[in-house]
Length: 118
Image (tube, rainbow, N blue to C red):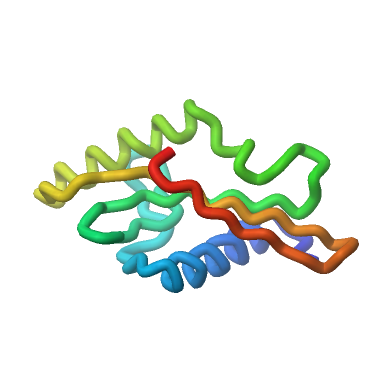
């Protein structure tokens, strides 16, 4: 089991990147800062520029991973993605997705879910 918050974040982003690649996403960048906002994974999927927020929970103590991606956080990511698309001169459609990873140490299992267009 991962014990530090930073290591947990890196692990989550590695899992999410591999999962997205299997789903046909092209990973363009990781940990991209736009102003004061970070985009965990910047990708392209079927012609759409996608900012992916990655959430990993090691236990269910604080709820499921997807619950960590609140409306305020996702709104900030959407603003960052709009700014980035404008700065890049991209006229592609944009979207914010969430990859939620829930781990269960007791059963040694992990569930990875994609929430597209949140």
